Amino acid sequence: MDALFDPADFRIPPGVVHVCAAGETPFLRRHDAAFAAYAEDKSHGPAGRERQEARTASARDRAARLFGVEAGDIGFVSSVAEGVSMVVESLDWRDGDEVLLDPDEYPSVAAPLAQKGVTLRFAPMLDPPSVAAAVTPRTRMIAVSAVSFLTSARHDLVALRAAADRVGALLVVDFTQGAGWMPIDARAADFAFAATYKWLLGTTGTAIGYWNRARQPGWAPGTAGWHSIASMGRPDWSRRPALLPDAARFTRGNPAHVALYVLDGAIAYLERFGAPAIEWHVQALTVAMLARLNEAGIASTTPPDPRRHGASVCVQSPHAAAIVAGMERRGVLAWNGRGRVRVSFHGYNGTEDMARAADALVAEWRAANKA
Image (cartoon, rainbow, N blue to C red; front, side, top):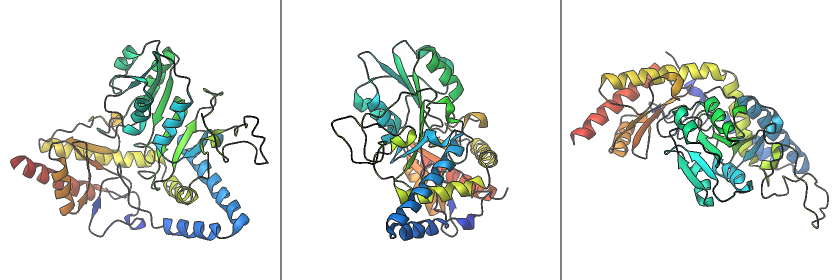
């Protein structure tokens, strides 16, 4: 199977297999023009600012289509951690309130809650009956990554929504490990976020934020800034300023315009192929990779069923750092961290990349376990 994207569209080093999309994707060459356009627009005063805002609006429209929602439901934050923090800080927490998390949830989702001092309870999000059994009348929120960063397990958001609705809890979702390859319907969530520097082919500095206005019409962040208030006239600070009526209120100050120029072009590139085609492509590679590891006797923590796993294959090992370093010496860029090797595919990979990645991982796994 050939690559779905043209690898020449990306800054992939010559002779290298790039299979670490879950950490960082290679940069699209077309982003050079985005940087140049931003530099030009920034230099042209008010007219240039108007063009910056137009590009932001275009990125917002594309992000809305990506999430399957209206543009007014979408805003931008600097990171998933900031977005989750804004939601956490906006709620009127009461003594005894609880939040349900997976034991291996990513820090951007869990840390804002832990820092707030909210009572955290845990259930395996891959097992919806266990989640349903764990919710109580005190459960205020279920917070989850749509796809696990640690194992690439894909969670059933419809079932988690039902569990949250039983007790009137919020469902907050991080789509970072799915956005860019997986079809998304964000409407299952009350709030959702996605970093843009992984499968979305963008940069750090901006993340997509979603506010489900139909489910949470009265929500307001706990703080504001000049960009998130409704009036740009001279304010009367003796009164509390009204906020923008839609999810643009996520952005309290200037958005990261240059990152949004990049994101606008990145999503436009992905739209040429469509999420269903990208999903089919990367899942064919993950299934083949899992089969290769199984033949070699190497267990993966990634669920074997493609309906239940993402675009990565993960192998737990105390030698993960050495294995990933050895793979790099063989010309394969994978990802290390938290005691596991993670191989992640995107549209610029094909069967040859998968085979080279599998060969390198198997060889280095065997070498590390002989040492």
